Structure formats: structure tokens, C-alpha cells
Length: 299
Image 1: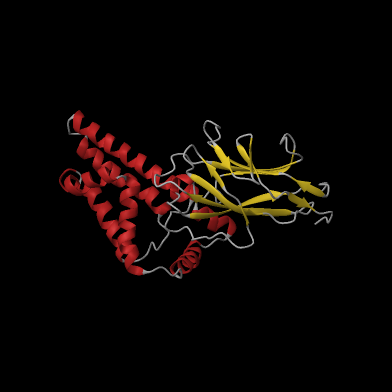
Image 2: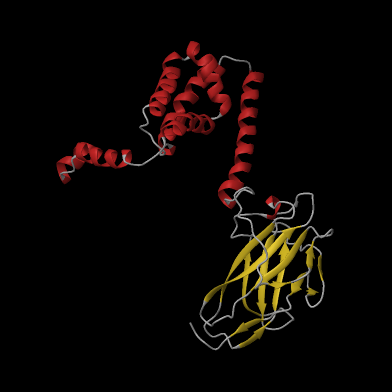
């Protein structure tokens, strides 16, 4: 393919390689952390049981493949060639270890082979659980910035859950403008010493009236833009939760009641809600004391 590209299009593969590789090597990555990170990356990518089999028994049963895997991994890590971009390399590199491990376990009893499969499945479940939090949600409790209820927020006395596990301490909602894309900020706090067992979603309804049958706009997302589920909240931690509100261009000026609530995204059930006046508990949600004000100024 490279020869055809050179003959028909004049693309010099050597020059292309030099340009790509020089830009790759100019990426500033620390040396020593990646000497350790690269081996750990491919070991977990390939599977801890597979690599353990290769390291412990591969040298005797599958020497060429084991040497290819271990020596190449060592050189890539120590020479600092791969830098931080290894995902595509591991896709081609992993089958070498899998083939070496297959040669070894093919001669073992079925019970031992089954143990390897069970261990791989256990690693997959653990990694899937970890990656769901780190990748899908993206923020661990330690990374979540601390928050306080600001002075310009409207304070409310509310609880969610049978034992009041979650409190909505207050909120901020700006003056809404037709055609604008604005945000409403909620301030939550975990009140229970026990972890919250449900990853609740948050809904906000800016309704036409208190029947909550028709709405000017609404928001329905997991807390902190899907990054910090309620199951990760820490005791007494205040969570600043910003939600987008898209205001229609034909929105009429006036005041609109605002409902806020939580629900289980799986069963759709809303937890019990409790509120002290002037906040009201309605329809398994809270009717906030301060309505949203829509001006007649179009964005």
C-alpha cells in the first residue's frame, strides 16, 4: 500500500514517518511514571491471569512468544518511545500474550482452564464498575471541589428519602430571557451517615402553572452534568449542581412555578419528599418558594 501511495500520489512514506514521529516525540510526558504505567496498562488491558500465566510458565512452554511480549514491553517502556499513546499499540500487542498463555493452558486440566476464565470475568466486572464511575461520571469524591451555600442563594428546608438522606439546601435561578440558554444551580447535601443506595436523577420543571401539566422548559439529568452520582456523595458534603435551561423564543413574560425532584432512573420511582414552608411538597417533588421570572427581553 505504501508503494502504491508513493507511485500514484508521490507520498514519501519515509518523510511521512519522520514528520509523524518527530511530532510524537515532542509530546512532553514524564519518564519514570510511564516506565511503570506502560507495563501496568497492558497487563490490565490483556488480563492479569493471562499475563501471570505468561510470566510464570510461558518461558518454558512458549518461549518465542513470551520473549516477544516481555522484551518488546520492556523496550517500549524503558526507551520512552510509546509516550502516553499506547492504546492502539496494545491492540496489536495483546494477542502475543494471549497466544503464549493459550499454549500453556491448552495442556492443563479443564478445571484449571475454568479458573482462568472465572478470574478474567472477575477482573472484567471490577474494571467495568471502576470505569463506569471514572469515565461515565468522571469525578471521584476526592476530586469533587468543596462547595458552600452562597449568600445570594434562596435557602430552603427540604429532605428526600424515607429517612431524609438528601437535603436540598438552596438554589439560584436567574431572570430568564426568551431564546436564551441559561442555568439553574441547586445545592444538595447528603445527610445520612450511610451511603445513598440509588443513583438518582434530578428533574427541574419550569411549569406553566402549579398543576405541572405543561412546562415552559425542563431539565432531566444526573447530578453535576452526569459526573457525580448520588451514590458517591460523602456525608455532610454540599454538592453544587448546575442544570441547563433552554428558554423558548416565544416564551411569554411572567412568573412560572418551579418544581424540583429526584427519581430512580430504573424504576422511575420518586423518593418521599419533605418540605417546610414556604416550600411545598407536591406530586413527589418540591414546589420552590421563588418562581422563575421570564422577562420580555429576547436574546
